[in-house]
Length: 430
Image 1: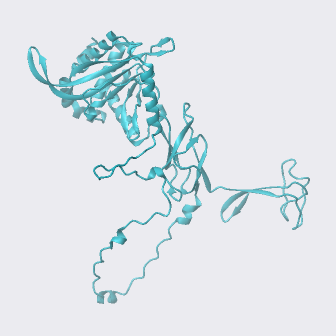
Image 2 (image 1 turned 90 degrees about the horizontal axis):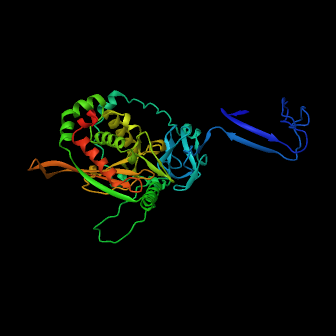
């Protein structure tokens, strides 16, 4: 081990023939076979071959982090460029997989000196993708400003008041040209401009998440005997309930009271009544689950994702709203882990937040059913022989008809309807 200018360098020496050591030095405890014998050598010696390797501890290698079991590779997307200064554990890249994006963190504080893998290329676990130099931060550290000399007071008093600085010229306001190219992911793509008088097309590579979503949707269409049944729900009582208790609920649980907690509880209530909807086909067997994990469809910047809320049947309304809020925030920031996406026994998709009136959702394999929620709109309905205006919502249940019969699907939706229209049926267990 040799220290040079405060830096530790590791030096390895070897020779093929001849007996040699560093000039004028003794070396003890050498490994067996390293040297024929130990002796003091003169300042000049002869060796047939000489090999040295130096490892500088200040250069840190950026490596691909560990993938979950079901993931073998991903597409690299750089968030930083060569020459950028980064902090320890700062996100410098993302690896997009079939289900989620895995962040790559900086191993140290320093300057990225080299990108070994181009933006968009496939990478695998432990692959070296770049290097960070810790020393460059010290080299770039700004020198402390020297104190400015204070002019005599008399001179300052005699001098006229300085005039206001002239406004900067347009050239001075123009941004400087970057000295290094930015990665493709850091450059925002300009959208197509309509009405400009020109006709053009733009091709954009599909993300892994979009490709996988397309494959799974087609797989569901080709595999399942898919059928959809519908019902409508009077939302009057639920809206009154929210308006009455939303402030107290937010004060106690720290989240807003939405409709998803009610429909999640309603789904758990209906799944216990119709366990076949919570089951799935595995070869020639039907697998019944004694737990309820809800997949909640969430829109993210990279497409539709379905994180999982586990053991919903054991949660209260506050736990469900808090869990959905946290998963939604993770999806928006791209921080969903694979553990957040795995599993799920039943899916709820709420198109109502976008104003949907009616839809036929597609089953998410290997699940057997999905509940589609829609917008709430005032419509005339018949109540006790009279036409009244009520806030109504259509709900849809798409299911695999190979496993679930029409009777079971209709009874399932009726349970959902009765729970939402009058939650007292849940507490009375009827």
